[in-house]
Amino acid sequence: DADVTQTPRNRITKTGKRIMLECSQTKGHDRMYWYRQDPGLGLRLIYYSFDVKDINKGEISDGYSVSRQAQAKFSLSLESAIPNQTALYFCATSDLSFDEQFFGPGTRLTVL
Amino acid sequence: KNEVEQSPQNLTAQEGEFITINCSYSVGISALHWLQQHPGGGIVSLFMLSSGKKKHGRLIATINIQEKHSSLHITASHPRDSAVYICAVRFGNDMRFGAGTRLTVKP
Image 1 (cartoon, each protein chain N blue to C red):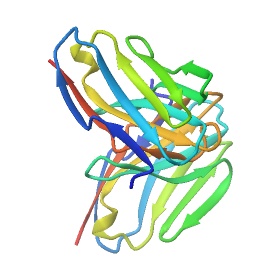
Image 2 (cartoon, rainbow over the protein chains, first blue to last red; image 1 turned 90 degrees about the vertical axis):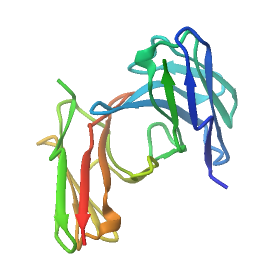
Image 3 (cartoon, rainbow over the protein chains, first blue to last red; image 1 turned 90 degrees about the horizontal axis):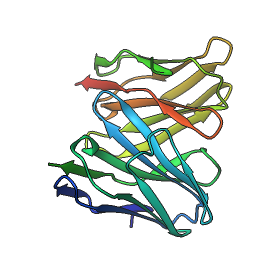
Image 4 (cartoon, chains in turn orange, purple; image 1 turned 60 degrees about the vertical axis):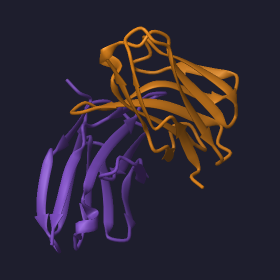
């Protein structure tokens, strides 16, 4: 089984809908991250969490929120999806802060 | 201006060729990462380095902190090396990524 899993893998939704992307890990890591990837722009950090009680904004947090339900689970929410949030979303984990990261398979989100 | 610039954007090579991908950055960093993104989209960490050189199999990564530059070399390239290679830098509690270099190795 994969160490870092993301659900759903693909999602098509409409403008204004609330969407939650989920990430689970079995690596036992405290550090978890959410990134989005857009063609030609590379990955950008949305939020990161160093432990269950620690949540921090990244470079592009506007329009997103997160919840760290447990050491193993880190969810990303789009409260009211808009078309420019169409992207590939990756969750990642690491043992030490911003150290070697282990990525989930990604969620392809399309907002119509 | 992006803090992390990679070159080239696209690279096509014949099997067996020596490959070099470059990464330049404009901020003071604590570490630099090289990642590989497979055609299916999955991302794997290849190296993390803050000085000198690291080697893993046919892959070699170097960094020059003074010049704010890193290179990823692939020796004896193979079609299975075809992927997007991504450079990323850590500064403070932030990560910035290059746009990636798409490598295609032809048999």
